[in-house]
Image (cartoon, rainbow, N blue to C red; front, side, top):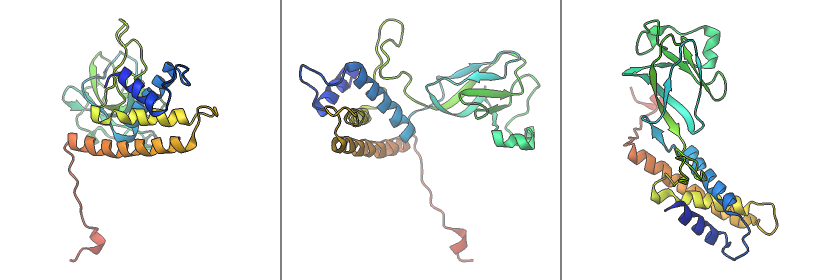
Length: 228
């Protein structure tokens, strides 16, 4: 669907097709955008290895994490995978480099941390040369669905979710619309019905992403109960 088609279908769902609209387009587009982002958070869409990079700057250790990234999974320098470092490890000191994939050459970072401060990426050691690091991330759609100009030429954002799952955004938006405290707009029962429908799409979305990533599920017995 196009964004306009999603907006029109949403208006039908919330019975807002009369000349005098209860909700403005900008409100409903914001709900749809929130729905697409929420679906990404709840299901694991999207894993991306090709969009986000960090160009290091000499003597700069901290870099902003783009807002469309939900979580950084891995960082690579060419074919070398950087080790991940977490805040609680600071009490024990920087871990030995022997526990990571490659040894540093004294110039490029070999550790990264994302929990020192919200929204920033910290590299260790502080870069002493300019290199490009590639990020493997879990992200939202590349553009918020209510973005009116994604390229500087007035092109609005389009839904990025597969067609089969796009109505999750509509169900979430309907839930948000009916959750309005305005007596004319609000309807608790309708809101909960649309939330239930959204959750079904989340279940389907989790299955879909597992299939697309060719995930396999294995079951091992609890060693406590295994016969020896």
